[in-house]
Structure formats: C-alpha cells, structure tokens
Image 1 (tube, rainbow, N blue to C red):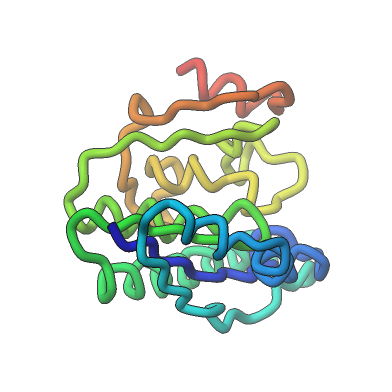
Image 2 (cartoon, rainbow, N blue to C red; image 1 turned 60 degrees about the horizontal axis):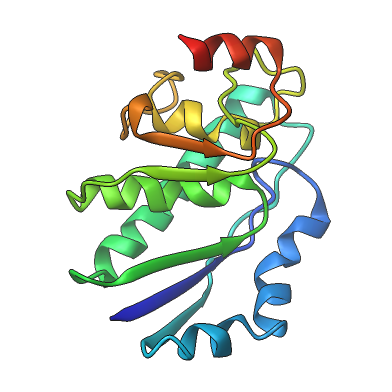
Length: 176
C-alpha cells in the first residue's frame, strides 16, 4: 500500500493564522516516519498553496473559497490515487477533510466518514452562530448548502464520535 500525504494548511474555514502551521507541526513530530513503519511506501506531496482566510469576507464568499480549495484538493487526489492507496490529508481547520471526502466519492469508493471531534460540524449558514465554514464541513459534504456544492455523501454514511458540543440548529439537523 502507498500512503499519500498532502499538507492542506488552510485558514479558509476558520481565519486563525496559527492553524496554518498544522502540517508543518505534524511532520516535525515524526508523522512521516511513523507512517513509514506501517510497511507502506509513504509519498509526501508537500503542502498545497492556499490563500489565507479573511474574517472580512462575507460568509457566502468564505464558503465559496472553502469549496474551491476542496475542489483543488479533490483534483490532486484524483491525479495521484491508485486502487489500494491511502489518502492522508493533514491540515489546519476542519475544512481540510472536505476535498478528501469529495475525492473518495468522485473515485467511486464506497465509504463512511468517521468524524472524531467534539463538534458535529453540521451547521448551515442559518444555524451557525459564528458563520465559520469549518463548522459546516459535513453539511457541505451532504448537500445541505446546495448553493455552495452538491452533496457527495449521504448523511447515513456519517459516523460522529466524541461529539459533545452541538449548536441547537445543528442538533436539529442531525436528528432529522
């Protein structure tokens, strides 16, 4: 098996400069060496160049930028992935995962998303108290923001683990 690692140092979903350094920090802690011990070939594709997130952008613009970056990530994975490969994205905010989900769907894989987080990240523009797109990743992936993108995974394919903090509207959407 080949493990492909792509750094996705995004602040588009949560405009905090510090999260941009996550791929660098994960590599510095020995992530690539650890993955290499799994009897697999590891290919580090470096970091994808991404624009900074701007708090001054209106929420719909921020969402559009997140989706555009995810599409670029999806295209990268579609270029390099071969059957049996593991696509491993490391990054800043929660929107890091969206392009990988999109790529797996476009490649025709049958998969579930296991979301390990304290938050559900299932907000829409209407339910989000902050308007930060990183809290809308799973809603985007399931098509709850159709003006931004079509859904690529059914909600029944989501497995949310460790969730302990849901916004009221997000809780309603998840129960529906």
